[in-house]
Image 1 (cartoon, rainbow, N blue to C red):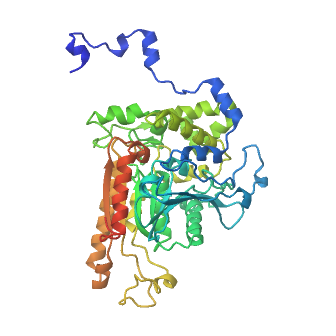
Image 2 (image 1 turned 135 degrees about the horizontal axis):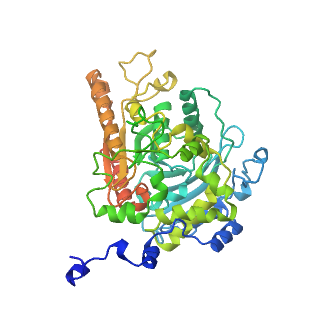
Length: 508
């Protein structure tokens, strides 16, 4: 019973409150004032410093290693002058926590810039491993659109508690603190453009894997990172042991595409990322059964505004606006950070704001891939639901399959071996604006492929069959479930990681 009901008073509707009171209760689009915004713009904090500040909140890691090498450049610099700086003087030394200061240690933390082939191509890498233990398994983490590895600061410590694992987080090419070469598409047809955009990211990931001499690994991707994780698994078979998709973008098809030129979903749109705040996204919806997870019949979708479609098709990203805004840039960014991180302690929320702004204002590069990957409204131009059934079922190259331990004795030497499945875990927030029904549909596709494979499999292939899929909902979390529900998120993944180095190795 509410306090007003107990006292016999009728609740006062918002429309009945004085105007001044209503204005005070209405959240501001941009919480940062003009003077603080100008100060932040003038201070021009570097992405390295901002990343360092965020990672300083990792438990037991008071002084995180942070290299200051970079492939980024100020937005005013001409593209031809950009070079990847790999000066050894700007490398960072690893930081090791001891058993005295770290109850789950000792652990060793590293920060590196990994140079790739070609001009101005390098990936920013942050890693942690347990000292004195053999690395049996590797986990690679990919962030979402326009973000960076620092957003996983709530997860590094919790996941690295599991023995036998080394944790890597990467900034995708053209994002975060990785290098930002010019993004260009040369294909003329739609399928070719989509493939080029995907390859721009996943080819860099594959080159990184080869340089690190990692044969097989578990790949975790959030949002757009989840989309790219699936694309990588399909193009580069034989190297994934488990796929973890955290609120991945691009799974469902748009059922309205045939009727509308530019449909906008009501419950699953990138617009929600910028308009919904934590109070709406988590607190209020958690008290209601009518949330994004329980809705089966979403309301009719509205056409996306023409101006938004124009900006999207013109490939004008939100970060372009931040760069053009100059001293107002930090104020614009605060409209997002204040909504996404309002549930965090103030110091952490402020550190993430500075980190986000330092990344958003960098030269545009990988961000321009979005218009080739997604249509307005956040539906994929090549929906993953059409392709995800092939995950873990791809033919292996003859050169690698013949030497692989997974090669069946019954398979002719001239015929390439085929993957025999691996576990796929799909994670969603309880109040995720990403459509969880897409996750359930993906699970069914994967299980159908497993059933088909077993029908025609040899006894040896049946023994090696490892295709599984499941969906897990993280309570009281939205799209950024690794932050909103980080404790449960870490707990779920710890159990999965332990199974892979235990008796249930490799299985869900």
